[in-house]
Length: 292
Ligand SMILES: [Zn+2]
Image 1: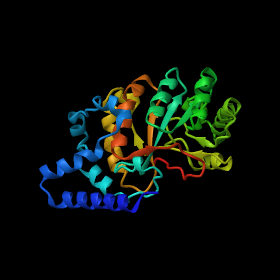
Image 2: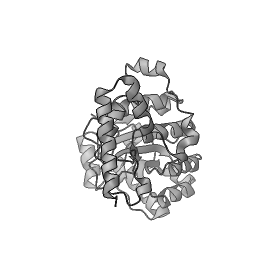
Image 3: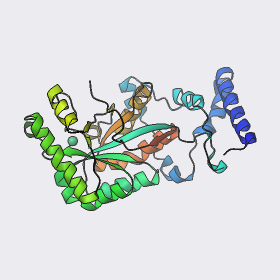
Image 4: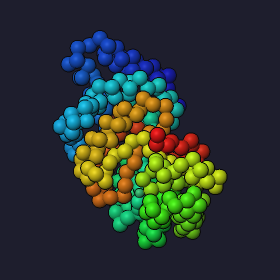
């Protein structure tokens, strides 16, 4: 536990920072604020890579929040006092959660995605296709051993086939979850249907998967990585994170196991770390979010 002195010192820091934000000139405030968002060693090598394109953000009509709302949010976080090790008692201790989800894998690059996640001490959720699981069983085993969450994305990924009836959806998910069980021993009930639940998963479809005990997950932050395929996917994602963070629901980011996504992943994780997010996998106890 923290010593009383370090708690007091910490609260003084927070109070001073809030005071600084309210009363100081912007120049002084930026001097005070800057050290808070600096990241420790592990992610430093990715640090120089992040340089959001203002042009894209302008197009989106939203300015980046990393030096405005985000810092205010950070300072307004309740001070965690559960750290066992005083050395870890820093102002940017993780206190918010984001759920990264990767669809359509596994893939030949899964191993690299997993290594980056390891580097950031991040857990994610993989919604996978049956055939790909068969093709890359070692990647799926590594996901399981690393503590990531595993879910089914189906067999055909063909809307004409999977959405023929509630039973065809259930059958594809059954098959995929049983393959996950066969390879990892994990009994997952997490599913995400191709293209999300809208418009194909009508109420009777949703009831069918729910009756099977499955949790159907959509997302509320779409990286559009399949479309942007470059650093714009980071920009597009962070703008939405800033917007959706105000809502009272888990922040679930849609990504795909793609080479372009892999190349942008360190920047995305770096940015979210700066915003004080940690990264967890979805679990069966959570209430799934659905597209409207
Ligand atoms: Zn998909």
